Length: 109
Image 1 (cartoon, rainbow, N blue to C red):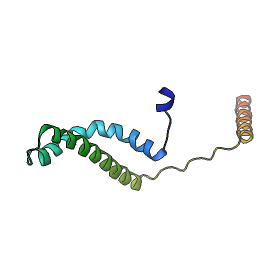
Image 2: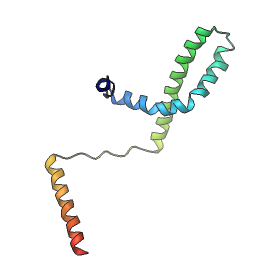
Image 3: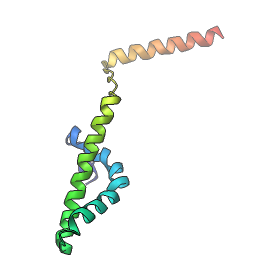
Image 4: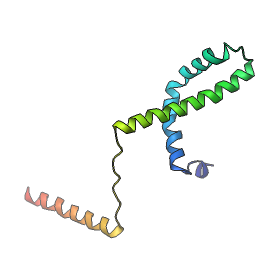
């Protein structure tokens, strides 16, 4: 299960589920109260009807509002461009160059 459950099946879904987890933890009680006060009590739903409605509506509301907040955040804070990773030879050459620069600095002291 450890190997299966920790795989990233879809990047978008993974970012949505993992990103919204903390938001859900912080905001779920607010949405539970909203659904209870605005829908369940006025329509006098039974316990089972209210429970199913709470679970479905609260989770949908959390996901939708999280997507709205991330969209607004992305408008004002654009994502940084990812650096391309070079080939193994390019990385080795950069590391050697970096080692030479460090050695040169140490010799100059």
